[in-house]
Amino acid sequence: MPTRFRKVRKLRGSRQHGWGQVTQHRASGQKGGVGNAGLHKHKWSWTVKYAPDHFGKDSMKPPKSFKPKLWMNVGSLDALYQKLLSSGSIETEENKPVLNLSKLGVEKLLGGGSIKGAYVIIVDRYTEGAKEKVTYVGGLIKGSN
Image 1 (cartoon, rainbow, N blue to C red):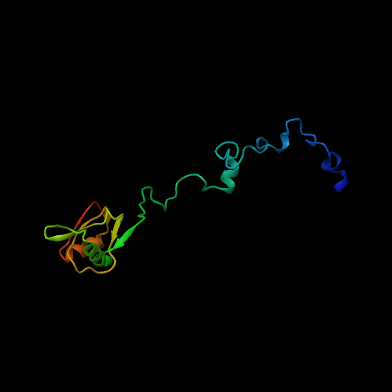
Image 2 (cartoon, one colour):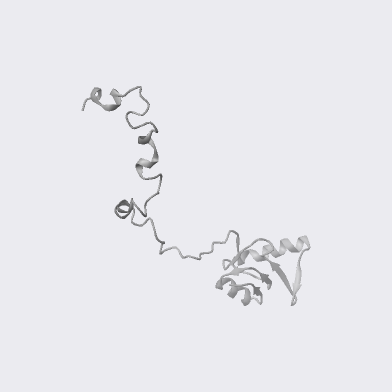
């Protein structure tokens, strides 16, 4: 159709272009809502065809996953002990120095690296590898796994 015959050309200058006084043709009500509105109701056939995985859970993501924001490897415990020893803020328990990782903000102890000293470690979470390495040298981990 040529441009000169179109409705928008004929109604140029009018405010609503023949769609009433409350500007009905440009509101979101004409489209069935804004955004994802109506995907469970009047846009359900669109959802089934074009976005079948929109609703529901992801089977690859466990519902109670925990991602620690700050963690530490077993291999850096000796350096941490030396740093705390130089500052003079070391407590002892059972003739072993206590490293309170929870007070330092560490949420999980991982099993990377090797450890030389025997420490009492207080941490909220730890891995099995970390527990094995700490207990192998005579240390102890306190906290929930």
